Length: 284
Image (cartoon, rainbow, N blue to C red; front, side, top):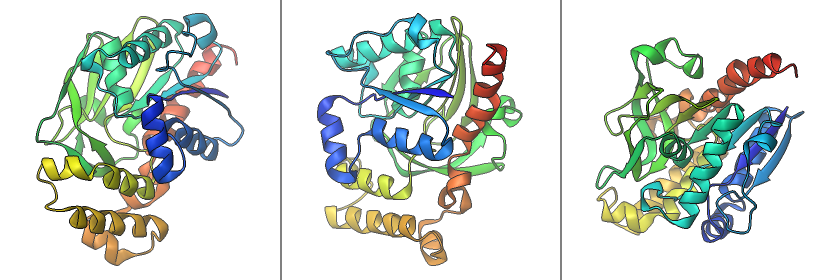
């Protein structure tokens, strides 16, 4: 398999993330995918950067899957970085190569296909998205195969999908964000995406909370930096030792969050149920 990973972060965001967890979002996604599919070739591109040559459909068609990372990118601000990332995603759709994105990756795909994204204001999800449920269409969709009737997932986002584009199917939702999972069919491509982060481990989620303390306090999710740090410490400790049932209980999470195989189910399903069949169709 040949995977292309598009880092949605700009240079500043990459440096900030490396300072806290040692890798940018794209680099972390490469590591995750190499663990998931050790035999796969994984190439990283900084597609939001001005000095990265624009991608076109033809070279993208040579890959078996394209993955878009999460990032602090706000696609509705129409920044140069957002425009470049949206243009990249439109080329992915034109290539016919299956694609997957989480968080901002989902939002980029929505915007590229003609949908809309908006800020969540005071409804930020931070740490874990709670009580996600599949829609009627999602219950039988292979992206969510193996998920229970309701589940929690690691997350951190302050933007959300406002309107899905034509050709999209809502697959999962919860009380905080209407679009938690979706399929988008646009041009020649098929995209599966989620608002949460099946690719991130708990140590990365804890680090993200520490990086965003000011926003957590502004939104009233924590009262102090000390409170935020203590909560992040619980999550990180559970990440280091998933056998800590006491911490699972305190955080209100189960195997859908703690067990890596359950936590990353959507990415596994994407590879098995969209990438592999498309490779067969392409004669690969």
